[in-house]
Each structure stands twice: as structure tokens, then as C-alpha cells.
Image 1 (cartoon, rainbow, N blue to C red):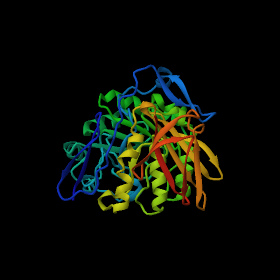
Image 2: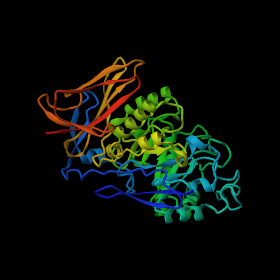
Image 3: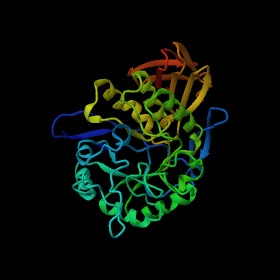
Image 4: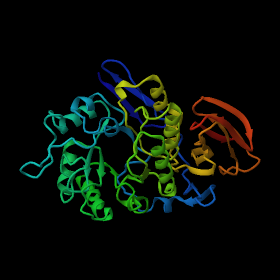
Length: 414
């Protein structure tokens, strides 16, 4: 069965479906109205938890100028669920803007001319034919390589020393996205190994989203804006509560460095893989959306249950992630594992998450001072998971939450 999910970006959201059997999922994207053309924008003040006006030009300085990543990428990646058990038919049956093939797609050795070779047993049609198929269905194809001698699986060559050749190969196949890993790296700094591939991709003339995956080892948020469109701020995620919350916290440290064209990446989504509860997955998806993380689904979307489908297709939550202002939300309050996360959105709105990370039911409250609103402000509070609205809310917003549960709101000053 083929499930083709085509995301069309415009001033309004739309989702066109090509369906050869039956629809499993359509993940909707909502983009809010264009942000103000003023040279100033809202950014988080990391020391006080409020918001600070900073010049847009300062924030955008030294960003990679390849025209990609104006909002965080949305897609699917093969690794979290399938690891090395990938094949051509799986890719043809999956879709959601970017369809990204991870490790294990290539033969162990390069060909006689030094080119990477797709594994004949799993990709018999070749990558060019697969990319043509993906593009025909309105989607984009991503691929994986490594800034080392071999990839992390040690089943195929890395691209260290072959950057120009491999970039040309990827471009000739029609690749749209490159995840670039960090194994077998000869102990050479990523600051030396990643820029050559960035330059090589640019030289191909094909726009290819460049995703650095150096695991946050040398604080890429501080230097990768001129190299790639996203950068991993953490080690690999696992489908476990403790792993998910640790990635959220590690990524939060770098909130002020993200923005249109370059995004912090706390690794791919585990929603739907079975290792966490529904409430934990809801929190996972909410925090990743608020933090403007890439929304890369890591489960088998051909076999979604209704609950997972509902989580992954919440267009109101996705709209926060895709908001054109492009400011990463962050943790603004934490007391005994009761947390408030918040961030500014276009049109003077604020996204707010109340999150109970404790082991028992508790009340979580966000006061206006926590989220950057003036004390007397009255707001309309939209609950993004209940799809309900409270009018004329003043001073604070609170909720009784079960252990590990969250509430997510967009508040609009009246």
C-alpha cells in the first residue's frame, strides 16, 4: 500500500492526498500569517525567562544561505523503527514532506570509480529511480552519510575525503536532504570535517537541506549556522521517558541560537514506537514542536493506531512548530519537576506548555510574568490538545495534570 502525504506550504495550510489504497495519515501544517516586516523580532532572554527585542540582522548573521529551512523540516526517517532493516518498497510506501533514508542503504565498498553504490539487494531500482518516484508524488528524498571513514553501522563507506564526489552523486540522484553522521571520524574535530561537505553541497547547485549529526559534541549551535540547516544538540534518543526528557533539557540550553535557516535538533521523534505512554508521547510531540525541533517521525506510519495518528496529525501543535517568527520556545520555570515552557509566536501570541514531570498528579501554573506578559493582560487561551478556548483569562493559567502529562496553549492578548 502506498500512503502519499504531500505537504504544501502557503499562507494557509492544505494537504493533497494521492491514495492508491487507503489513507493512513495526513500530517497537516499550518503556517501563521507573515511576521512583521520590521527589522526587530522577539527573542527569548535566556537569563530572565522573558522576551527581548533584538535586531533581526544580528540573529540572522552567518546563517547558511541555501534558501532552505525557513521553518523546521518535517518528515520521516527510517532509523528509529527500522534501523538497518530497510528496503526500496518501504520508502515507496512512506511519505511526509521529506522521506529520509538512514544508515545501511549502501554497499560495503565504493565502485571502481570511487562512487557510493546503493545496495542492490534492497534498492534494486537505484537511488535516481527512487528519487524520481518520490518527487513524482510531490515529496522529497533524504539520504544519509557520515563525516568519517565508515558510517555508524560499519556496513558502508563514509564521506570523509570524498565530499565533492559524494555531493555530486547525491545531487545527480536528486537528493533533497542529507543527514551527516559522526562515526569513524579519526578524532578530527567536527569543525574541520563538516564544512567541506557543506561547501561541496553548495557547489552542486542543487538545494540540499544539510543536517549535521555530530551529537552536540562540540556545541554546534555556536558554530554550525554557517555550515548547516540543523545540528544535533544531543546524543541519540531512545524510546524511553528518561531519554526523551534528557534530550529536551540538553537542547533547551541552546534555544537562543536557533532561527529560520538553522535549527537545534534534539533527535527524531519516537512517537508511536511503543516505549512510552500516550501522555509521554503527547509531551514529547508538544515540547519538540515548541522548541522548533525538526519533526521527523520515526515510527512505521503504515501501521499507525488511531491514538498515534491523532498525536502526529494535530495541526494546531504543528502550527506552533512551523510559526514563521521562528523563535525556539524554552523552559521558563521549574519547581519540583513541575515545569512551564513558553515561546513567542507571530502576531504577539505566546505558546505555553504546562508539564508535570513528577511521579504523581499535580497542579502546574504559569503566571504572566513567567511567559513575558504584563500583569494586567487579558488573553484568549486556546488548548491545542482539547481544541477548546477560554476567554478573558487574566494573571495566570493552570491545570491539574497526571504524572508525565502536559497541557499546551496558545495565548492571544485581547
